[in-house]
Amino acid sequence: MDSFELNKIIGAILLVALLVIGIGKVSNLVFKINKPEKSNYKVELDVKSAEIKGDEEPVQREIVDIAALLSTGDLAHGEKVFKKCSACHSIKSGGGNKIGPALYNVVGRKVGVLDDYKYSKALAEYEKNWSFEELNGFLLKPKDWIKGTKMAYAGLRKEKDRASVILYLNKYSDSPLPLP
Image (cartoon, rainbow, N blue to C red):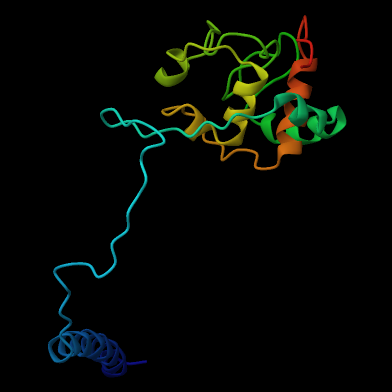
């Protein structure tokens, strides 16, 4: 192929690009859209359920019957579901930390207390223990339950999955907590 053929091909490509851009500009001039200054639809929100302070968003915390929830769980199912968690967490005694902290003895333990793991500021300052209720809320949607956590997991939507994982975590402890 000689240079004249190559110039024709490049010229055709440039002409098509120019036409596409030109048609877009001309159509913007021909079809002018006037946006209204005031919206026709007013959306009212009810923010009475939680008080907003500063830049914090209200966290909706449902009261869950944890005994009923845990009754739907199953240890074998919890082991199966925990395989998702095992990519970042170890569950065995002396297993050590991975991307996330070791979860042996986690049920009943204070949040963010392992010395050999660097927790996010939100978890380090969280003043609660990992109770069944706290684990349920956190496993549902970690970033909504404790704002500022660095755990990048979307959560477990199904109640049976959460209950099963909580039972499985409780099993891996020196002294498992009695079920409610």
